[in-house]
Length: 401
Image (cartoon, rainbow, N blue to C red; front, side, top):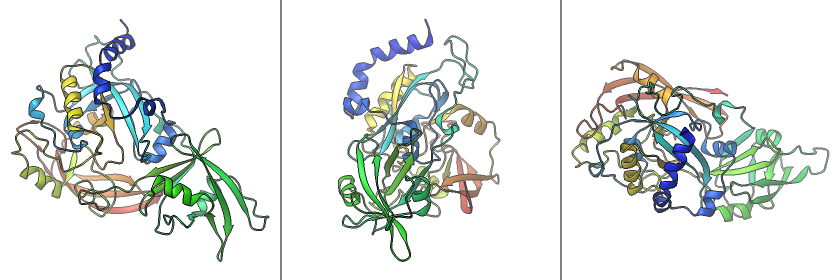
């Protein structure tokens, strides 16, 4: 039996399970986004694994992505990281908020989980198909909306780079230079805007059509707008919603946020404030000790438990991932995990990590130092590498892409 046939039969048997845990309509499932548009909306630092590549699934990280605490005591004995093969990836968007998310179907691998399979699966364990992030990226630009931009009776001030690189060419000989542009959103709906170059000093503006777009999408100051020029020449438009913290403010304070930037810690690290919260929550009767790191309301604790149970039983399972949820990735490319686990981590080791600015045009760097190595939950997850490192960090420098 081929690997593909094996997976297909397994997933056919799981249809009832998939239907019960899927909170989205079947129509939504049918409309998959172009991966490049999805990545433009998700942000350039998000790297989704390719189909047939190997990843490690972290149940603890999946629990952090849920909207509430996950009681792992109800699950069978499960390893803290589970090697899996990616069976399929669907790039989707919420029909109400336009927020992008992905559905990954994973097949647990037999073997020791160190990249050396026993050969019984008919799979090349070292195969890592090149993903969309390694392809040439189309031209895109993101801008965080100001109060003026989000005013439903006003217009949108277009950065010059976006107007001259992403938008169709404007005839500057006209008086005034203007054009109508068409942009497709993540649902395939076409929006018409008037693009004009005017004012003193002159600037690019979207006028007619912009307020309709703002009202329909319920845009607010702090949200970001993304424009992308697709390979076929189409102009696309997407949205990145401002991240909301537990108290309703912008950004969850329990993620990576030492200097107010919107980027979470990687799967193996946590800042010192998060470490203290985890230590205080270790005696929580099996509930996810990092439950205060909220994901999206559509990822239910019950869905996490179902996925973990199937993974523990070596059965195919599905996970839903929201890249803008301020939680680390919990399905991590195998070569990244294996490289990190080969390092002898100890206090004093320096690290450097990039993150993307809101307009996607620059990379800034976090420079820091490992201040401790400690298991986040030694009782329930002994020897788990999830959030193993405690780090202190500072913003270092910024450079153009």
